[in-house]
Image (cartoon, rainbow, N blue to C red):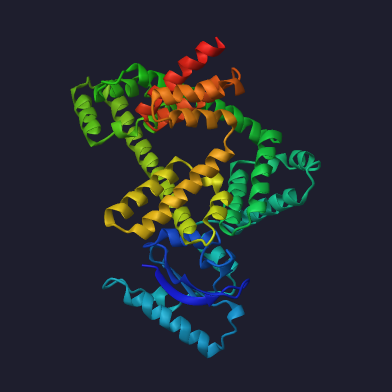
Length: 451
């Protein structure tokens, strides 16, 4: 298990002391998230609760991956430790690593750890052990250099620079931009993060890859809409067999199956796969291979959906922890507004319920205050049409909702129907039946007014 420690440090910006958590042993097998934080430059960072500055904590570090028989030690030169002090520090960490090994797991590589002279050197060695070649690393550095060049360019020059480097812009480049924006947000550099988001939009609009991405997104949206329509056509009393027939009908389309799983993931439970196995056994021999292939594909797609859900929950929980620990939660929420979604609100609501269950009034009140801040900022960031729709949906009764419509309908035109359709798609994905009923009622009212 990766070793997590606590200490008191002084902020490099405001000089105020605060408690911070750091890691000096990373076990990649037991704690893959720690490995990911190392590779993305997020290891041993501590945000000051007084001023919000992000501090890099200097500490000896041991990286261990028993699956690759990889052991690396690193001591930051900035610590200025003597050779004896370095050997002592590494020796203590090595004893910690070996003491956690199961009986009989000690191997020769543990006696000859590799050494990294810099943090980047440590990261490079970890990546090389994962099969990432020096050429691949240089390609990634080239992507970062291109992002930096675009960031430094004027708005007028960016389209021409994108065109000149069009052949370098692909999915990995776009992922690099996204990761850099997320890192800037985590480090409190909101201005840089916002510029990266704007830059990403320009890249999508001006590059060949970006235009292809838009077309694929439109095709995917159309596919999801088709799948949603077919699922809705099954009716509220649909059985597993109905969804099974739907999956069989589109067994040759992985994209369509992925859309179905994404829309109604709970349907594909243990009982569903039991019933599918029975159906395979009862089918003619000639049909079984196709049904078996469908079963394997559905198992793969459900596993992918579950993994994405877990990652989304982990990211949301991490963001909530950052907000809770911040002395200025409103500023942190505003800086991370693009990352606040339905999953985040679910995690926040679950934490409020748990605090209420435990009777922890202080934590509960703080979380409820954060919820109010989030809702206020989200509403302020919404287009007027969405603010109006939310106000109608939140009304205490149909009469109160009609009063809102009467008072505010004059502010809008026929484009309000497009906003209603967008909200309907989101509520359908979230299976919010009650809100969908009220939204359909609102649509009828709008249609009557605009004709």
